[in-house]
Image (cartoon, rainbow, N blue to C red):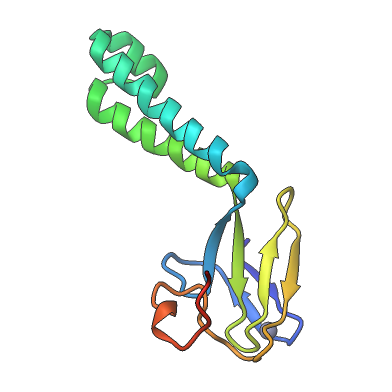
Length: 135
Ligand SMILES: [Zn+2]
């Protein structure tokens, strides 16, 4: 998604990296599967490296220059797992509405903050502002 319109009329653009109003959501129900898949990818690479089978490494993780390409292949595979298992969340910079992507498809559901307005809750520095602690 490159952009979509918020209910308040603001247009949310997603055309670059490091957005303070965007985050990924990893649902608890798939968290174990996510980490198992990450583990499996590392395990497969370690087994291939330990076997010394350059052809196996190249076949599974990428061709030529086995280890360097394998790391690139591993990164792409982990990115794929992350993309499959997470959903996006956007915070409207005008009204503070959270837009949460449903688990399947590209549909979003919105949630309005009780206090209203942009809270930068998805920003890496969101803990710097006054907020309720989760216990
Ligand atoms: Zn809005």
